[in-house]
Each structure stands twice: as C-alpha cells, then as structure tokens.
Length: 194
Image (cartoon, one colour):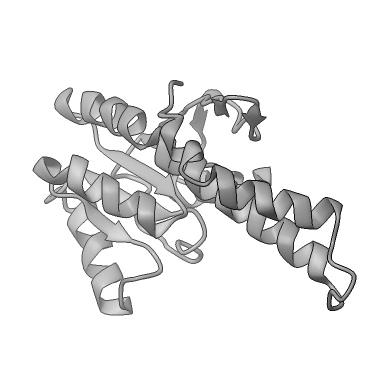
C-alpha cells in the first residue's frame, strides 16, 4: 500500500536525536533512559506510519462504502482517527475509541448495528468486551497495525463470531526503509459459536 513519506520526514530530526541517545546515552542518564528513548522512538514511528497511510486507507474504505458494504475500520492513534473523520465525513462514521464516553460508545455500536451508519471506526484495543457487531458487517480493515498479532485476532473474533464471511486485508506497511509487521490475510467463513 502506498504512503505519504512526508509523515516520516516531519519527525526525522526528533527520531534521529532519539536514535543517537539510544546508541550513545548521556553519561549522567537516569536508570531506564535507553528504554524510554526506544519506546518514544517506536511510538513516534508507528504514529507517523499510520498518518502516512491515512489517505490510501481512506480511499480503500470509501470504495467499499460506495459499493454498499459496511466496514469496521481499526486503528490506534487519535491523530489518525481525526484525519479519517475528516476524509470519511460524508459517510457519517461512528467512533468507538478511547475518547468516547461509555454512553457515546454504546450509541456508536447501536448506530452501526442498526445500519444508521455503515462505518464504525474502532480502536484495536478499546473494543475489548464489545459484542453485537457480528451480523452487521463482513469487512474489517486495519488502517493501523499493532506490533503483536494477538490484538488483530481478538479484534476480528469479537466482530465475527456469528455465521458470516470475514474479509481480512493483507496490508503490507512499508515506508522507505521502515517496515512494520504484516497483519496477515484471510478470507474465511466463521462458523457459529466460535
């Protein structure tokens, strides 16, 4: 999938500084300094990778929506959600992320399940315990990837425990020389009760 590499260019200086601190930490550093820098570096690159993918992911999701499909779009960063909100506003997306109250999340789920909207933008992690989407959708799009495959499996499983066909997309994320984990790909029928 294509990406806007300017998203990474915008953090080139900060990422370089963090990398230099990891490789050559200051002599007066506190305990855990290298781990904190590595964590900040990883988070910065993940966020910018997501931002770089936004226009292309949004175009793909629009294509599905304009063909009458419902879509659960998974992501992680609020900055990415904000851009999706703008690019996909014509489709009146419902949001179930870390920003919404419990009441707003329930409203979003109900709106999607009752087909008042055909787009639910859902945090890969904040949907823990979410139920009721099984019959509402067969398309799951990962707009951002987690570092571990387990959240992807859980994300899909929570949305596809009924008898439905699940379309899982294979999105290879690559920007310049930075490459993140492949989400994998499947197209399968999930039997009832699983």
